[in-house]
Image (cartoon, rainbow, N blue to C red; front, side, top):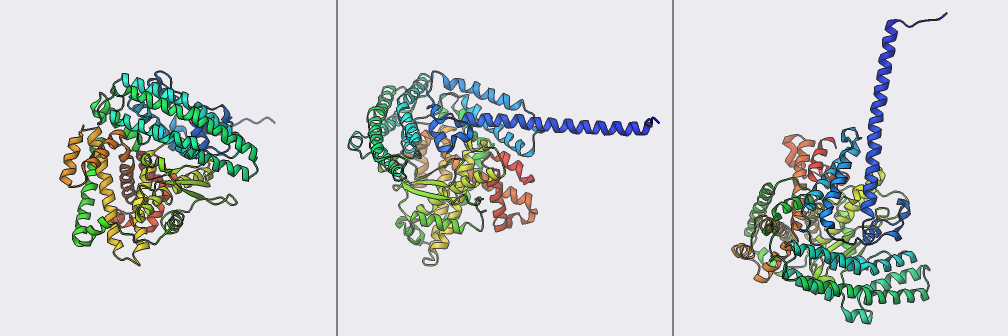
Length: 615
């Protein structure tokens, strides 16, 4: 007998159908948005990765895993008005991102969307001022950076050698593109000062010294031979092949690379006199607005310049008063500053890194190393003598994202002569600094199945802010090491830490004064005269460095202060308000806070703040 549904049954069935359809549609919308976004991020990641073959080789050990033929990559050659066109390209990428409904993404993708949106917005704002950047900066530009990258270029196979030779052969065209950009800068009235030009010219002459190239003692000859010998020892190339490779390397360095550096020096010489005087960005039309955009991009801070100043002034006043009080309480400290005593146990760089790894265990999470994947190693090297005047006190070379186990730290012997500076520098570059933060993030992203896109979004304010944060914390480790034999080390190292903070904070304020407020060299001289420190040559050197590297000190010290502000906010969010002050120094809180930073950074600080309540 045929049965019919009652009205009540029909209504129930209809409700179930509508509910099922709505749930299906909801899942489709969300899954579809996530699929679109992940496809977008993959495309963006691969495009960024392939933009420079040198950076690609450092970033990826196994190109085939990403479907990339490394031999097809070439150095990015600048063409006429590429800088002006970059705004359009960035706006196109941003528009494509915003076609995706972020509210329809899962939580992980929503956060990545937020990071990417901040990054693209900040990059577009700075690109709107196409001729303010300086790729040939005497302190961090291509002429001094390229030789270090070439000296450390990974040679694991014979194919790597061919890739290396291909890059050497492309350097003349690469430099021609850079000169074209500099000519466009000159036409826009934004070419570098004569003082900076003279430094670049001298760099080119010093770094490609003809005598050392001719007799085979140049560091690019020596380092190449060393890497080549490793391949011979492994049986990857024969002795006969090795000799042929060394001969080809000599030929390329002397007939291709050295003449390219000569060309660069000659063209910069011809452009001298077309530039602006040595000074801040504000002396050029649009310079102040560019500086604001640059600070946002470099530091990841969303504060306006006035608020940044206030944050820096409060920190400077607190540390200055603390140091003054400390010096008054112990008259011997002033003599110790002038004597620079060695109070710590005698340790090699490798022993210092091992010591730091042990002492950080209580406050920092362990690296998430998978079983049978090997141990994290670090090769400590010293910068070649010819590079010492142009390099930072130390720097960390990031390992490939698909193989983070072999790491390298370079030390500049010229700037790390005493035991304390070597110790704190290795904390900054190694543990718990750049090496630890980089390796932890890569391993965490892999285990959490987070897209590798995060590795190509550069948040300098977080990366250098973290390194500054742990460097300053490492003074406590130094006290623990030195105090048993030298009780005076406790107060002396506290004074050294305060002195370091005062210097970095002061230079950060000078950065703003020079580039935003238009402070001149004479203004800076008057400031230092009131402080009673530094001779005139040192003052001029500080002024020129800050003029050449806008925002650089802020990347370090404002980044550090943003982490300290975030730390206070985390304690307020995670604990009762009356516990906030004590919580900031509690080991359990520190461990949790460091986990939060490592798992959610690198990032801008606005995004990190929004994550506090959900962590």
